[in-house]
View (spheres, rainbow, N blue to C red):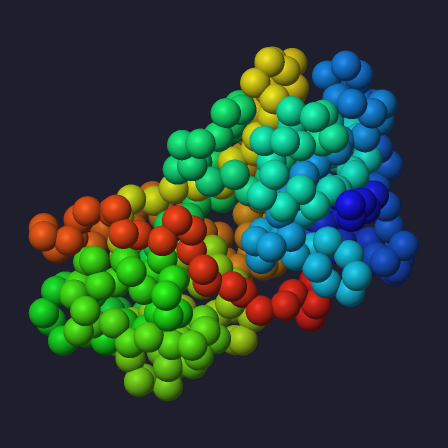
Length: 299
C-alpha cells in the first residue's frame, strides 16, 4: 500500500504570488480551511482518502518514489477545496473493493464508459477517447477510408484496432510503442497518429512534439470520480467541489501542466466508421498504450 499525504500547492496563481514575494515555492503549503465534511461521510477526520491506479499514466504513476499524475493533482485540489489533507492509496484496478471495504473515500480515473462500475460516479473531469492526431498547424483534414492516409498506432492496442475498424487495414502503420508512433508523425513518415486522447497529448507534450486532435474514432468518454453508492453526503460534497474546480480554471491549469493544453473534445468531429466493421466484439478490453515514466514530468 502506497500512501502519501500532500496538500494542493499546484495552482499557478499561488505559485506566481509567492514567486513575486520572493518566497521559496518549495516551502509553501496553503493554510487549510475548515473541513467541509467529517466522519462518517469520510473515514478519517480531516483527511480525504483517495484511491488511484498507478498503472494508468499519466493519470497516476510513480515518479521520484512518490505517486504523481493528473489525478493526484486534481485530488489534491479537491482535498484543499474541502478543507482536508490528502491521503493517496494505489488501489490498482480494485476500485470496487477499495470503496466497498472503506479503505478510501473516493477513487479517481474511472472511465464513464465502463458499464461495470457499481458505485456512484461524478461528472466527467477530463475527457478522453481514441483520437486521431496531426502535427500542430498542419490544417489536416479528417482522414477517410481509402484516401491513402497512413496512421501510426501502437501495435496490438485499442487505438490500432480502432484505426483498422474506421479506415481499413491498409491505413494502419504499427509501431512498437507510442513514442515510436509519435516520432513517425513528427518526421513525416505517417500522416496521422492514433492514441487515447489523454495519453497521446501527454506523450507528445513530454517529447516536445506539437500535435492537435483532428478527429475522434467513435464517441468521446471521460474520467469521473467514484464513491460508495449510499454515501449521498459525500456525493454532494464532491460534486460541488469538482464543479468549482472546473469553473474556476484549476483543472484547466492541471491539464496545461501535464498535457500542454486544455483538452476539449466537445466540438471534435467523429471519423466515419466503415459499415461492415462496426462490430466491437473483437475490440481490446482496454487500451494497451502506455506513457513513459513520469519522473521528469513534474512541474
